[in-house]
Length: 383
Ligand SMILES: O=C(O)CCC(=O)C(=O)O
Image 1 (tube, rainbow, N blue to C red):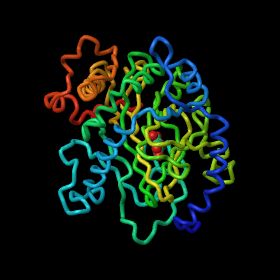
Image 2 (spheres, protein in one colour):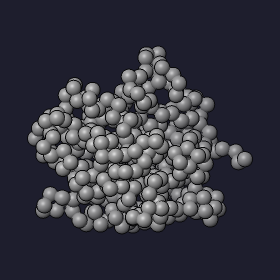
Image 3 (spheres, rainbow, N blue to C red):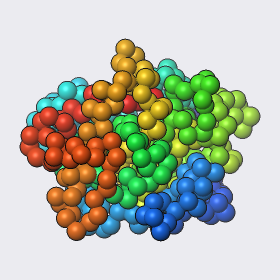
């Protein structure tokens, strides 16, 4: 087996690839401020650009004050995380946060490792292991890589979920009866964050007679810090339209290298929001850079892709996503919209069609926290 590069060797060896990727990204563009048409819907040019390339970067969509609140919350969650998977204390010896939730909110990785590549985990959708640089001797045994449940762990996270512009984008892509998927905040700590091997997200609908490039929905990523080519998400533009990609074959043809020659980095500033089709081929590399990346990631689906589907990925295979289940999980959107409207009363409130007339049942309050928000992620709609 090849000897793992040190973190410094890995960082140095990636520089040319990063520069070339940034040049390819510049040629495609597919980024800019969010633009609406005269009817208040997402401008069709942006929708078309997303359909064509499978991603789009909305620059400066979430304002600085909101980003500052979100950063404070994520810093608190990182500070209060257990020291490892089976620990109940944080690094300062305090009871770790999150123990009141039915599902653990933190996921850990060994520093700079690739936990999924080349394994059967998550339906085996990451077939090839990425390079795993050796961390510095001072690195801890495990580091936080994912934090789940943004709507139950932080008020600003819940409010972000009800952001009118994000929901307007979700509507343009998945229809006005769109439904939620799940959420996870990716934390790529400097010099420690693990990689996410090349994969396509969707797992259930590849062989559907109704298959089309949008059938597995899309994810938002709200960037809390600048995302660089060393720590950001990389995508192969247009690959969402190709059906299931032979990832092993692609990497074999590339002399076994994970540095795919047509991939581009989705570099961002803090406050930028990316959207990526869940069928696009994507990855992120071990973060051997000195910069943190935090991407609050949450997705939405077309209703018809979900109703009647069975549990997949993180959800139990025996789960059936019937109308009741979809309604119950969608209540989070209704409460999030109200939480946002209470906090930002001057901002236009998004009108979520499936809950028109039900607004009073889903006002944000301690009662709806217990009834709707706490442990909402047990009902995620993964496909
Ligand atoms: O943001 C990242 O680093 C990886 C995200 C990803 O692979 C996903 O959301 O499926």
